[in-house]
Image (tube, rainbow, N blue to C red; front, side):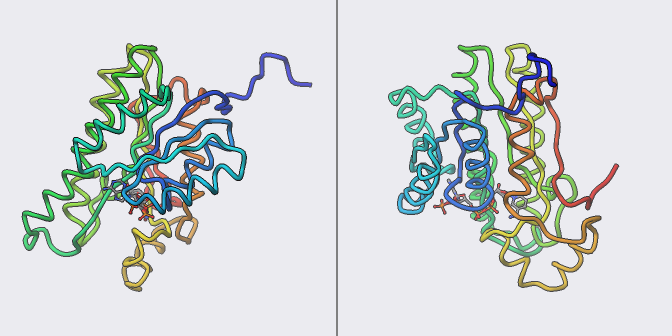
Length: 259
Ligand SMILES: NC(=O)c1ccc[n+]([C@@H]2O[C@H](COP(=O)([O-])OP(=O)(O)OC[C@H]3O[C@@H](n4cnc5c(N)ncnc54)[C@H](OP(=O)(O)O)[C@@H]3O)[C@@H](O)[C@H]2O)c1
């Protein structure tokens, strides 16, 4: 028999989580996984229809789920999002910064400045502003967990995805800087770095057979991942199970990178 003190450290009952870019793909899978552990979830995305469908699906599982339209590349929209969360009395325990964009594929030397700006605005500036606003609110309660969805591209740049890779390396730097700044206030900050996950975002890599075979061939598990494969890692980092973990990158790539 288990001792009474053996509470489930993965339990998220009563916690409130904000997830950016969560109407589909990895963000949605993470939202569903946090909700299954008892968290209330607020989802952002650019398109209201897609968000409403996701929230309806989550509510059918008995979850407290809410939708907030917010473009992560728009500082004003981020500011309005947090004002609305305050009005809705939704104090955050967990933030998952998941939304990202990659409008281009090709050599960095051919990169147009517009594409660079778009990548930086959404993937880095938007991530910073979202984390700042969430952390300010977490500070008042001296607790919280922030998880950035990075990428293995942020550790080892992927061919043809130079600017995206730079933005994800930046996310890892942002994660570590925030972890140092916020740790003494009870706020932990970590990142998950997925490998190849089957979503709309990665569709082009699935069509490029050579790239697909190269990536999957390097994985110990010899397969690509599904969004649910990423969700468990985020549940761990969001919960008390990781109470003494901060400033870390959890690689979820089927054993593609080791050591
Ligand atoms: N799939 C992979 O192989 C892979 C690997 C490593 C890392 N990642 C990372 O995982 C994260 C999620 O990717 P995914 O594969 O799940 O993509 P996805 O299936 O395309 O889903 C992206 C989600 O983000 C939303 N979104 C897109 N741009 C946004 C913006 N500017 N502001 C707010 N929401 C936005 C989308 O909804 P709307 O279109 O309605 O806005 C959608 O809900 C990203 O950070 C990506 O870099 C993915």
